[in-house]
Length: 359
View (cartoon, rainbow, N blue to C red):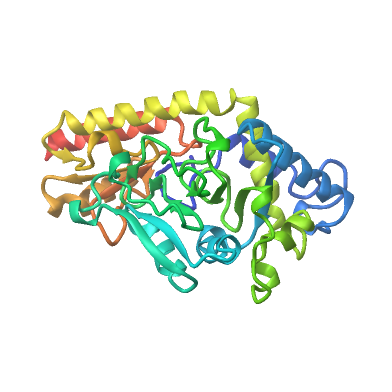
C-alpha cells in the first residue's frame, strides 16, 4: 500500500525520511543492541540522543544562550496551567489575547490561578482575523501576556509579534514552531506540543528565558515546576523518551534540508497556491481576512455543504485523508505542516478542481 497525503491537524505527517530512519534503528540503535524505547533515560546512549536533539533545536531556531529548553510531558495543554503556576510570581493578573478555540482553552485554565484581562478578543468578528496592534489593551502591571500566534482549528494567524514592553510575552507556537525563522529574543516563553511539526504526540517543548525560572510558589507540584525540570535537564522523572528521540530526528532532518529558512520558502509556497485555488473558485471559500490567514492550517467550505461527505469520501479514494474540518466549525481543513510535501498540496488542488468540475 502506498502512503497517503495526510492533512491531519495532529497527530500529523512525519517526514518519510525520519520514519525510515526510525524503522532502521528500531531494534538496534547505532550498535547498542537496544531500541531507543528500551533505553534508560539516564544512560549514556539516551543522554547523547537528548543532548543532540536540544543542540539541533537550539541551532535551527537560533535560540540565545540565556534561554533554557525543556522537554516535558502533558503536551501544550498542560502548559495552559504551568504558565500561570510558574510566571505569576507575586502578581495576581495576566493578559490574554482571545483569537479562537485554543486561546480560549488557555484563558479558561488561567482563570483557575489568576485574574485574566482579555487584552483583545476577536469573538465579535467570528474569529475571522487577528487583532491589529492598536487594538491590544495591555496592562503594564500584568505578570505576562499570552497569545496563540496560530489558531490550528480556525486557521487564523498573527502577522506580527505583539510589543509588550517589560511584560513577558508567552506564545503557544504548537502549529508554527520550526516552520519558519522567528526571533526568539522577542519572546520570553515559547511552548509547543509535538504532534504537529515536531513528531509524534506525547511531548511539549518549552523555551524559556532563564531568569523567569524559579518563580513558582511552594504549593506548585514538582511535576509542574519549571525549575525542577530545568535543574534536572528535563529528566526529573522518566520523560517520553521515544518521542524525544523522534523530535531529534526531525530537527536533524530540518538541518539537512536547508533549515527553517528553506521550510519557510516551501511552506509559504504551499499555502499561497492552496489559497489561490480557493479564491479563484466560486465552489470553495475561505472567510479568514487575508492578512490573518494561516500558513499551516487552511480551512475551507464547499458552496453546497451537502457535498461534504462525498468530497471527503472521494478525496480518501484519491489518497488525500484527514480533510474533515474540526467538529466545532465543520467544512474542510488542510493542515500543511513541514512534513507535507509540496506534491501533496498539488494533488489536493488537482482533486479540488476536478471535483468542482463534476459538481
